[in-house]
Length: 385
Image (cartoon, rainbow, N blue to C red):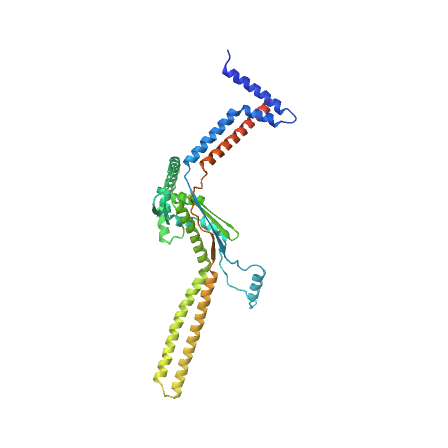
């Protein structure tokens, strides 16, 4: 009696013979290899269908995200390097100064360090505390609250988040239970002025999420920034806020010394103005009360008051000039950022569309199916030999 198992065995032997015949030739013909693959079309179709199912599951489970992009030009002057800087240093040691040289150290924060700034935990934690208006929920909330409670997620996405949140909470309990001094550490942070930063497991997870959704890179002096969020308006606002924070940090970093110097000169100029006014009043009062007197004592006193007045005026005038110079120096050292591309308002999700997911899934399924069948045929050929 004819059995399906016997037919399958017979078919396998026939295929093995064909594999041996094809690969035993000096030149393997592509058409014959394709014919062998065609005989295993059922397995290739199974791979393709499997990948299509995975693609559909991926498309259903993924949360729609909107990407906002922007670009700015950083016009920060390069610090003095090379020969002139070295010659200036040698001239300074000799007590001389070269024209155009400066012995002042100018702090710079180059664009190459912007990614390290943006991806740093303190920077990202400050973003979590900022409020944005989210269109999909119709209200303003902090980014932290939105990501934890309000962010729209698919059913599978909620399951995934619940699993990760449960694992994170378990890890947090174990770490806190194993460290009996954890509360003492938190209290000492508050007591000693926060010389270090303590992040919860929840904050660590949110910071890691933002690090994946923010992309910043520089091309020369052009800084490109992209932000992905599940709300289009919030992604554009967050993009703008990140650049504002970068500009504030770089400006403060570069001009801190000049701002301290300017504040000191302003204080001295105010004191000099008060002393000048007092000297002016004393001289005027003396002249008014001693009109017509020509004694040597009166003349000596008037000359003394005149000298005090002249000195106070010279000091005040010199400090006023120094104050204006410090203000110009502060303005010159303030970095300039020119906007190339304003933060865009994304109208379409940045995720792959459903047709693209289907095409890619089918292609990958067919590719891995052919790869699997080819490997299987090669193994069978080696076994026969």
